[in-house]
Length: 136
Image (cartoon, rainbow, N blue to C red):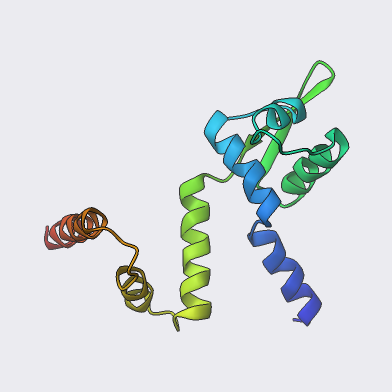
């Protein structure tokens, strides 16, 4: 497989920063038109209608969203759930930066000085539940 094909496939698996911004809005609202997405953006975020429409078309080409015509308006709806995308991104991060060792990724996270005691306790509880689930 050529480097160009690999690069093209990888870029279709992951979102750019602005694409993630759009997907987050669609995940939060379920669906929306170009105008809906623009109306729900952070205050002060100035993006032209044509730019927003282009980003949504790209998301559709990358199979992150689907569109349905309602009158003259296209309504975009996520195909991929946020959970599935998070898993995909974490697996990629684990492979690239942590030698495919999820424990190394988690160790880096919990070694972060910014984690509160509450956050660490929540992580402990999640691991406890997961380990308990595996015992059954």
